[in-house]
Each structure stands twice: as C-alpha cells, then as structure tokens.
Figure: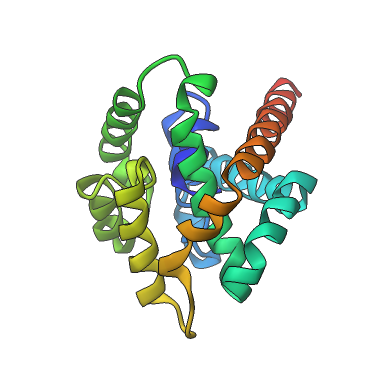
Length: 193
C-alpha cells in the first residue's frame, strides 16, 4: 500500500501515524532516536505491507498487471491500490478525502520533530506536493507514474500503468474492494488485541 492507505489505517495517535507513514524510509540507524509510538507505527506499517503482500486478491491484481509491468508490478500495484482507495473513498471513510488529507498534513507538520532531521525535506515535499492525494485522479496518476518511472533503475513501462488498469478496471476494483475490507478487519482485530 502507498501513503494514503497507511494514513487511513493509522489510529488517532500522531507518533504511530508518523511511524506508519515513514516506515519504509526510517532505517535501523534511526531507531534509537525514535519514540515508542513511532516504533509502533513502523511495526504497523510492516504489518500492513506483509498482509497486503500475502493476500490472494492482491496476488490476482498483480497477476493482471505483470504482463504489462514486469519487475515493477508490485510498485505499480501499490500506487493503483491508492487510486482505487481514492475512487471508493466514501465506502471506507465518512469525511471527504480533502478534509482527511488536510488533517493528516497538519498532524505530520506538527509532529515532524518525531522523525530525524535528515528526513524533514522529504516530509516537507510530501505536504507541499500533497502526496496523500497523488492518486486521486487519472491526471495525478499519470504524473505519479512518470515520476516513478524516472526514479526506476531499469527500463520500464511505468508511465503506461493505467492501460492495464483500464483493460481490467472492473475486476481490479472488485478485487481491491474485497481486499481492503479484509485489511481493515485485520487491522481492527490487531487494535483489539
């Protein structure tokens, strides 16, 4: 999953949100500097990613994308799932996407000191470029995929990632909706324990 899903699946605890959002870029050398709440957020991030990577519906989405995206299929799938989350936002959250994102950006900026200084420029870019909403429409998706393509180490078809989605939209949407319900249930069970 990408940034938006991690933000949505965080409890109302700023330190857990920070760890969950930045779990991929926080390194073991950072761990001694982090609060226990940020550590909990990193664990939540990993739990979400592990559940996602092992889920049968996500595997089916990846199978539909692989002929078009090759080795970058998992990255493309993560971004497409944030697109589908935006598309079906009102199914999963009562407030508008814009209000949700604005509230999360405020929390991130207010709690930036929980994250090592070296990452602050990246966090500032996340807020100023509104990364949580980077998948909200097809135009933003094209920009996101173009940026990912430029950062990729190998030749790729990432800029054309919407083509297989367009071909398999109904099936991918169906798979995503079932998967995300399962993911929410899993997270709620983890919260209860």
